[in-house]
Length: 362
Image 1 (cartoon, rainbow, N blue to C red):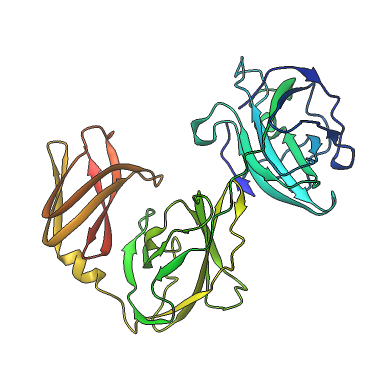
Image 2 (image 1 turned 180 degrees about the horizontal axis):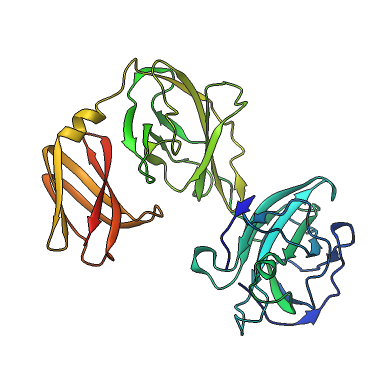
């Protein structure tokens, strides 16, 4: 499920289908390999999904429209809505792609919506396995929230026989497998709360095509009965923490695993479960905090330390990186002239450890 604070979408035309009202009566889309077709829908007025892939905190979709696609060979499929001509009145797309053995057993495969990643359209690309049925679903969530209409609208389905090879397994974990006395430390999260954190890293796969990202899971239960999970673009995670919580505690064993993926799908190699045990006391983050001072002057952030500062990164309060400076010196100077007036969070890396602090740009 993907939760949003919403935005819009509309589309073009080639031929029109009378999309049916629910999953069981989804209109069948026919697209050959390495081809494209554009479909026009008159109105989003069917049965909404019992559990949509895109949700909002203060509203639920009231209507949906359903299509199905069953390829005869494994293909990459891209579903794209076009940019609305009239953002005030046209349809704002919320797009979901689902799969399952039946309409009562659907799983969200991916989703997108108008405005996501600043796009004026919704688009999903997925690997479709031969002879399996996939459901393409739009609903009226934006309209319920008072944005735009329920149609008409168009969308395009494009196929490609160039399917990426899924990546192999990751290797060489940090912390090392079965490591003991692993350092954990306190840091300030982006909401200003003090949390405990650990640094993680691993080597990217050496087989298959390049990974687009990594699915990370960790638990104190080796069977992963209640894991924390996330998706990362990088294979080097500094200061992994659970927002607002001291997840990492002294002398505790944690189990973790990483599954690389790309547009071809998740790695099919065996996913190794690694473990580590934290140290009996907090790490050296408190020492790091005393090892440098910081101040702003003349549109620059200055950080001065006793040890070599590796880098300084600056985030806004939404968690977006807005400035970064490689340092490798005891003193750092980060240009913040382009930042708007407000409060920001700086992350400083010293001796392989990180510390964050808030500062004001005036």
